[in-house]
Length: 473
Image 1 (cartoon, helix red, strand yellow):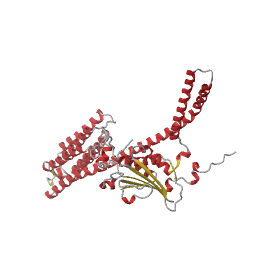
Image 2 (cartoon, rainbow, N blue to C red; image 1 turned 45 degrees about the horizontal axis):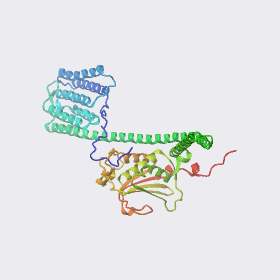
Image 3 (spheres, helix red, strand yellow; image 1 turned 30 degrees about the vertical axis):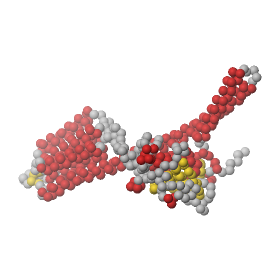
């Protein structure tokens, strides 16, 4: 599946709430439990205030407000199943009711003179982590309006001897300002963190799907190879028998033509199965390959897309001349394939793939002659769901038929880092136009570096590339 290097700026997909029912995260029973805890806290606060601090609030109205919360909880328990999940509108309604119920209690107990006014931030935090932006803004505005109303309209909180508990006006204004700022900051902060966490989860899920797809294709190739091996013998038998029939002098011309057709079709099947077997064979020899073979396999699907792919494979000075032998791991193949695809997508004419190795490191560098990365996004490359595509109009015209999700580099980076690689992204420079693959490497440049101990197969385990072991007698 192709992924664009960067997501188009015209794409409005929100990675957190992309699915139609993505807001159905919260179970009704979870909010019911939280509300029981809030009701218990409210009753405890009333009892402590009256019995210990000798306060004289409007007990009847207070119990009426708490009773409304109890009734709604009982209705939710008896009318809805435990597995009920709230839609976005339903969740917003529940949170709005909780804010109204809480501010009603605060209005009956001194308004903002009551220190429990800060509890209104709890509903804002839930809204910011579960609802979309518009619903969160609406609930934030509702919270600010309610806090402002209880500042102006509230019943004084007095003790038994008539003493009214009030804050100085300047402290009251400061308290109101702190709550309003807290609503705005907490909503913005919680939403930003939730967006990043969920976007990363979505991107990792896509990465796992890509890796699973690559693994399934590899496993399918093994099945195809086995089928090709098993069908080889009967097809050879058919070819031999049909050849003998062609040589039979007693057959007339039409029968001899039929025998020739059978032999030709059997040969055709044999060729097809041989090619399928070559692409799907999986054994110890094929899973241990020189690094260049793994890279060439990853780049092979993009060889015939009208862009020249040039390989430059050289050992570093003082390094052994033989190429490192690595395991053909699906994450390495798929990660490199994504990098090559991105380079081919944006290249004008050429993509260069350089492979270097020393005694301690293996380096893979992929460069193109395209427009390069936007400089303002260089520090963020490899993050999921980048919103701005790199490239000029010409590059965009060549790719106008598909829009990716901004996951290509993230998937490649994540898969290759699982194998122990370190990736760096940069834009090309004329100074890089050296070596056997010299050219105008002024586009994007991705360098992948492994420590040899992470992916290099020790010489003792390179069964496919060492001398054949003698057959035991």
